[in-house]
Image (cartoon, rainbow, N blue to C red):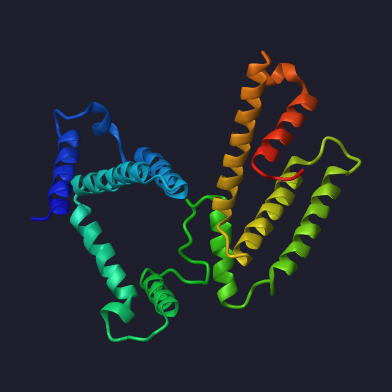
Length: 266
C-alpha cells in the first residue's frame, strides 16, 4: 500500500475515534452547519499560503483542509448518507467525465468546451435549469458576482470590453454621489446599500473582463494596507507615539514614506 493510502487511512481512523463514544466531546458535538465556517476558513488559509508561495505552510494548510473533508464525510457516514470513499470516487469519476480529451475518445477537442458541456449536462441531470443555475450562494459575494456574469457572458449578455465597464463604473459612482447629495438627511440607508452594491458588482465585472480574480485583487490590497499600516505604527512607536496621538498629517507623511520604500511614487 502506498504511503498516501496508508496516511489517509490513518487520518480516517483518527477522525472516527474522535467522533466515537468516548472520543473528544467537542468533535462529537459538531454537525455540518457548525463545521462549515471552519471549512471556509481553511480554504482561505490554503489560498493565502499558495499566494505567498510558502510551501511548508501550504502543506500544513492543505492538511487542515483535508481534515475538513474527512470530518464532513465522517458525519455523513454516521448518518448512513455517504462515506469518504464515495466522495473520492465521485470526484475521480467527475474528472474523468469532464476530460474526455484525456481519458476518452475526444482527443483534440477543446478542453474548455468539453468541460463546460459536461458541467451543463451535470446541472441538467440535477434538474438545475437556467444559465445561472448552480452558482453557490455560499461563495464570497465578489467571487459570486464574477461567476454569475461569466455565465451570462457565455450567452452574449456582456459588455464588449473593459472600457465599456469603466463607463458603467463612472455611471454607478455618479448615482452613489447623487444619493449622498440628496437634500434629505440623513441619507437613505437602503438606497445607499443598493447603489454601493451596484458599484461593487460592476467592479467584479471589471476584474472579470481584465481576467483577474476580484477576491485575489482585494486580498492583495488588504495585505498592502496592513503592510504599510504596520510600517507606520512601528515608526510612530520609535518616536514614542501611538497612531491616535500622532495626528492624521503625521500618519499620512509616514504612509507616503512606506510607499516610497516600496518603490511606489506619490
